[in-house]
Length: 171
Image 1 (cartoon, helix red, strand yellow):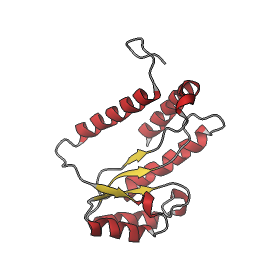
Image 2: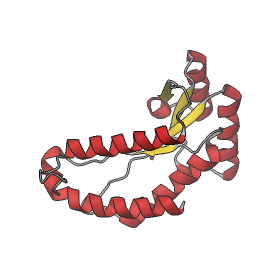
Image 3: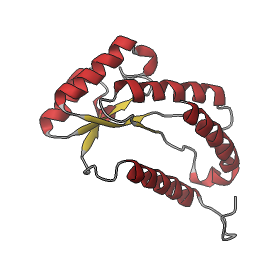
Image 4: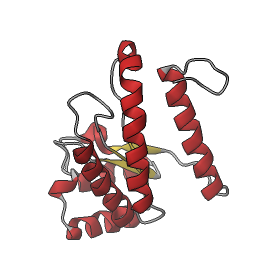
């Protein structure tokens, strides 16, 4: 992939541009909101989400992030509509924001399933909309792959990201 200047885009530059774009979009949506500090429940895998949120709030954080990865009790397939409402209520009761959720999808990797990733994206978007007491949360995931494999993976990643964007717009 060549940039507008004709130079090759590195994996690091691609990630930086994507992050900058997301930050600019977020600033346009909520320019007056103060910056808040949060802590992800990713590091509390062995605790029930209710307890993890309680610890986050007790420590003094104002936001938290749910881990939607396999093995956490907030994995979407484990949560019912009643659980979504309970998460939203717990966040509200604790005064916590839900600015993001953590997913882990294999973007554009050989042997990966675009359809499976689109379903995970759909489930994550449902969590973002139904569990957040404020604006829907951002879905955060890793790009994946080794830096030395960037040239082999980037085209597949770009194609799959286009499908993700189309799916996200519909959601």
